[in-house]
Every structure is written in structure tokens, then in C-alpha cells.
Length: 471
Image (cartoon, rainbow, N blue to C red; front, top):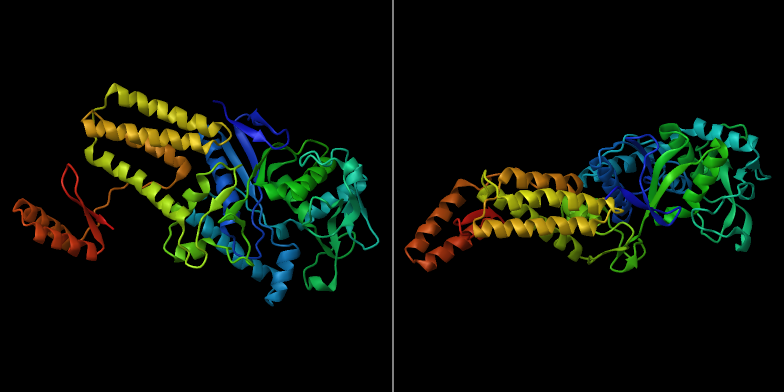
């Protein structure tokens, strides 16, 4: 199947065709760096990582921009509450964000523009909107975008302006769908902003949130590019306002494909600090979970389907993460078994299976990132190869492992290196247990098994003989 996505703009599945042949340009909404990102945020970032990897798996070159919002209402509010400068305050959370994406093996984007580094570009864009009659300075000295001047306002969120209750203007960065109003491009300085201000043709102040992404995408990707993504909550007002600003200023279409991912809930409820179900990556790591387990939970549900993360918020025992641990162990045990039992020869049936598995896996992903179909192809492959190994059929290690490595270019949770990290004294105990069993000294064999378990290892009996592994 050719690469296709459900385009939020059309609400239809469309074949993806880049503007520039094999070169794809994509903008992904990044974090507002006023706090540590939580697992709900990373649901979107993992979806965007999946999208990035699938695009590359199809042979395209990719340039991705992910913004860092380091000046807005929340960063100013919380930096002042902390008694810190805006730059020092946001630097903490920028650093933490990059540590978290590395933990989750999220591939780095080509550009991470910070809003505070693009103020001149924002001012230029605002001036262009004023010059074209799409923006005006109000009596409060702020500059607003006039939505009535843009005929297509509401086309992404499908808002019927004629039947929508509208207000005169809104200054807040974030507002509800009911507030279809002129929105702030430039906010005039007020004492509450402290030392956060820049000079502009309209007086001292700072940019509104929405103009930031329009300016940073224009600077890094151009006026017209292929893909723009984010959480469903970004569709309105943020993405709607981006379209209005960019298309009015640049005089051309802004983005060809819009993709939005659904929310993550915790135990069926919206994540919030007040409910005590607000969980960060570092918090989960501290409880013994691994980055690949968190990644698996966030990637294994289709991006447009709501994801329910099951966890006891008081003990941090998580059913979702335990299931992820089991799934990853099953995959890695299969890889280990192939390394142990497969040889150089391969039957025609397994060779054909390797080829069709890759095709099914890619076809699933190309169908609007159908992760369930991709997972089904992988687990059917594992089941079939395991049966072949059980029956003694010829299974070629190199070709089977190549399929798993191909699949892991997307999931990035597998272990391919065989490590013999069992201490010699544990290996000696295992050999002693073999002899005890041969002598039918079952009591001693059980004692040795318990000794090995107490040391943190486990003996697994297999047709090839006992194997000792880390518990």
C-alpha cells in the first residue's frame, strides 16, 4: 500500500505525495517548557516519532522541526513564581525534555527552534499582516489578528462562523472553541511580565503563542510544507490560528497534511495534578520501569484512538507497563531462540514468510500508521518461525534476524546482541544442578535452583538443556 494518512483538513484518507519529490518537510508541535513533560505529552511525541520513522522507511529524506515554546503566559507566570529569569527557568525543562526523548529513543528532529530566538521573525510577520490589513493595534496597545478578514477561518476545526457566538478579541494564549475571537499577535508590556519584553514598532511587549509557530516553521521549513502534527487539543485554536496567520501573510497554502493524535488518559480520567495522576518519565524510571517499556505503551495504540494508561498512582504499579514488559520479553526471547537454534540453511517457506512479513508490516504502517496491523504481522511471524524451530524445519538465522531488525527500525525496543553476563559461580551451580538431576537427587537439584534464584538468576529448562538468565 502507498503511504497514506487521514488528513484532518479533509477528514479523508489521502495518499501522501511530498511537495518536493523525495524530500519531506514536517513541523511538530513541541513542549512548552514551564514544567517536566508528562506521559500525556509523550503520547504525541512518540506518535510523531513513529510518523518520522515510517516516512524514512518509505525511502524519503526528512527535515523535521519541533518548536520549544519558552515564552508564553505559563512560562512567564511560573518563572516569576520560582524567582528566576525566564531563560534560567526554561533551561531546566529544555534539558529535561531532551533527556526524556533520549530515554524513549525518540529520534532527534533536525531543528529545535526556541521561540525567544525568533522574535525578529515574529515581528516581521506581524508587520506583514498589518500591512495587508489582516491585523490591527487595539486601544490596549496589543496587536490582534482580525479573523473576519480571513475568509477561510475555521476550515481546519470545521467552525461555522455564521452560527458561532463570537467575542471582540481574546488576549490569552489558550482559549476554548467557544471563543472565536480576534486573537493576540503581539501583547503590549504589562508590569506582570517583569523583565520579559522586546522592542517592537508597537511598543515594548512580547509575542502571542500562535504567531511563534508560524514564524518558526516559515524560518526553518519555508512558506509551504508537507506535514504539520500535534495533539487533538492543538487543532483549535492553535493550528487554526497558524493557518490564518501564515496563509494571509505568505499568500499561499500553509500545509498539505494535518495529523492529530488523541489524548492519553490515566485510568480512564484526564491527567491532572489535582487528581494526583500526573506522571513524568523520570518518575516511572525511578520505580524501575524502562524507557523501552514506556515507549511500547505509547506506540502500540493507533494514534487517533484514545490511549488509557493503567497505573496505581499511589504505588506506581502499572498494568500497562507490566504488559509492555511481557511483550518486549516475548520478542527478545524469540530473537535469543533464533540465535541459539537457527542455522545457515532456510526453507523456501520461511524465506517467503520473511519477504511477506516485511511487506505486511510496511503496508500496515502505510495505512495511516495502522500499528495493530503492523504488530499482527510481527507476532504472526514470531509464531510461525517458532513452530518451524519446534518441528526442526530449516530456519536461517541471518534472514530471520534481518526481518526483526527491519521491524525494530520502528519500535526500537529489541535486543540483538547476545550477552553472557552470568557470573562463573552461578554457571558452576547450574552444572552441579544438571549432575544432581542426572543422579536423580531431586532435593539437591531444587536447593540449587533456589540458590540461583536468591542470587537474582533463573534456570529455564529447554529441549537444548538448562539456560541461566538474569531474573
